[in-house]
Amino acid sequence: MSTYVYAITAADHPLRLDGLSGIGNPASDLRTLKTSELSAVVSDSPPDLRAKRRDLVAHQSVLERLMADGAALPMRFGLVGPDDDQVRAALDQGKDGYTARLSELDGRLEYNLKVSRDEESLLREILSESSEARRLSEYTRQNPGAQDQKMALGELVSHEVQARQEAAGREVAAALATAAERVSEGEPTKTHFLNVSYLVRRDKASAFSQAVHEEAERRGDEYTFALNGPLPPYSFV
Image (cartoon, rainbow, N blue to C red; front, side, top):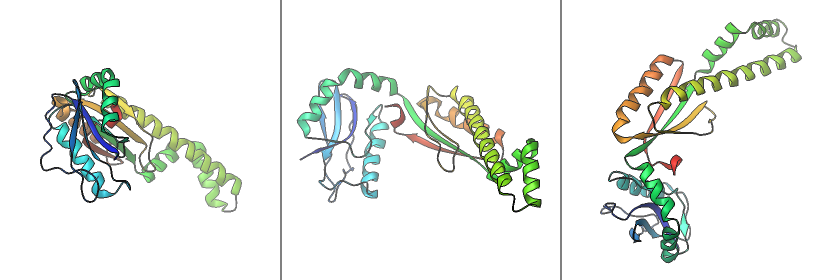
C-alpha cells in the first residue's frame, strides 16, 4: 500500500502522536519511519485520496502536534510515496537538505497576512487626486452615451487601482519585514491586494503581532488586515 507522508522531523524530535488518527475512512493509524538522523510521520494512504474536510483536519492536527514540540517540515496535503522503504530511502538521500532546513525553522513560526482596502474609499482617493479621472467622470455623467470616454475612465481607474495597491502592498510588507526573519510573497487574491507570509521567531511572535496591529491602526479603517497563524511553515520549506 502507498505511504502517506505528513511531516519530516529530526530523529530525536518528540513524536507525541497519541490520540491522533491519520487520514482515510476508517482513519488510518499513524506510524514513524526512522533513519539515523530523521523521522517521517506517515500512515497508509487510501486509494481514493481526496481533499475532504475530515482528512484535511487530520493532516493539520498531526502538524500542529509536531510543531508544538519543535521544528518539523510540513508536507502539503496529498504527498504519497510508493511504500515505506522508498520513503525511508528518500530521507537518507535528502538528509543534508532536510537537516539544514529543520535547523533554519527551529524555533520559528509562519504567519500569513492578507490586506484589502475598501473600494469606495480608493475610488474617492483616485477622483480627488487625478484631474483626468475627475474630468472623465464628470463628462460621462453628463454624456451617458460617450462610450469612448467611459472606456478611457475605466482603463484609467483600473491602472490607478493597481498602481496604488501595489505601492501600498510594498509599503506594508516592508514595514513588517524588520519584525520577521524571512518573507515570502504570494499572489494577491480577488479581494486582497497583499498576500504575504513571514517566518517569525517563536519568542518574537507577540512583538510581530503587535507590529501588524500598529500598522493596521496607522492605515485606518479603510484597510482590513487579516493575520493568520501560527501556521506550519509551508512557505519556507
